[in-house]
Image (cartoon, rainbow, N blue to C red; front, side):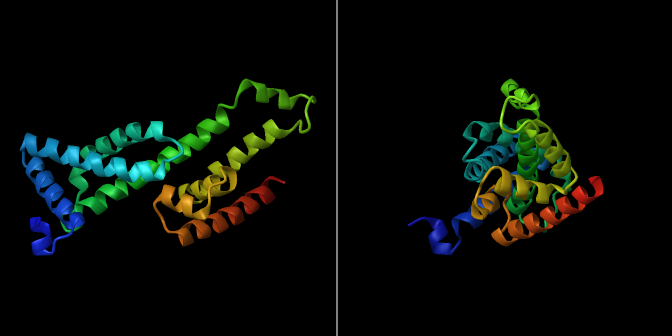
Length: 193
């Protein structure tokens, strides 16, 4: 029987304890401990991001590396009174939201060249390219969380549950963000008209 079971320590608690010790020793100058911390953090981050980026599995490893770099650069901001894994997940969540925002903008800005034909009257909707650019401008005016919720649910077609997983928030938070974001979009559209 593993020692964790005897002491009542869960797997998550054991991971938290192990990573915290490695992190503290690493910050005190123990290079091997810091490498161990980064390796353990990479495992946790990979699992966290893999669940949330199921539609983009090829991008998981790049985002893991971004998160590890952010953890390293922000190591001085860690408050030892807070669980280390909670701090790590908060940084990963912000990196994920940034990635989702960049990905949505990238998709909007890099439409295939065939889509430029929409601007000439040879298709059913001659204004679709213009509408897409206007929508991007409107979405850019929203706060990050509202924009991500709308892009994931209304544009990419994710369910509220999938969007909540991708954004690492509750389903209720996604619904509220979509509602507030749509109200914000309506107000912006009134300003433009």
